[in-house]
Image (cartoon, rainbow, N blue to C red; front, side, top):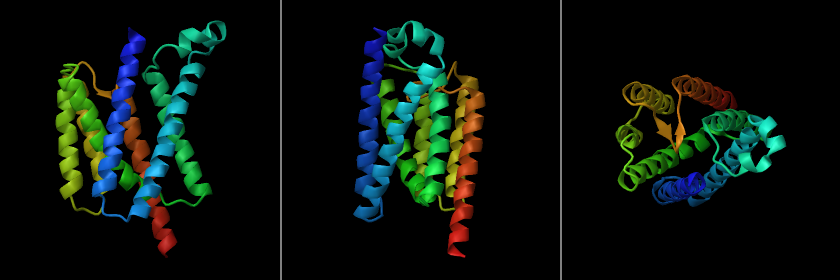
Length: 214
């Protein structure tokens, strides 16, 4: 039952990201070539994230995996594996960007609308189809973020969105039993860590771009 439930959730996630990516491709202002390039990079990073989740699930349960591999592989990963994967994905993304001299900001700018729309579709489906009441607060937060993304015009827009998202999740975590992102529970400490990591990455990318233009 747990496996079937997780497979259904994975199906919802894939479908949600498909809608998010399609929306970005149809409505973003960049050229088709740029959009295709960004989508390919984002899909590559998402694949890395999935791989790292599996790696994290094994490493964090190594003793059990060595004695009974199927007990780990057959069951869904928990939030700890997700946290591990996010950290490793961030490090890998920064390393690849530096080594291959990739521009980070355009990729982040492309990822944010994809993430917001995908998250909104996923949470809305959970709320409507699975009657998940805890999704309602996050749906409202995502709606606010999408509006801000479309109409906010400030110099540090990315940082502002990350801050609103982080603060919003922290508020939700205090008024709800838990808050989830794509089926993974977001602990307050991890939300704070994500905010710091995102701020560092965006600030690093901005500084790097300024140095490139000088």
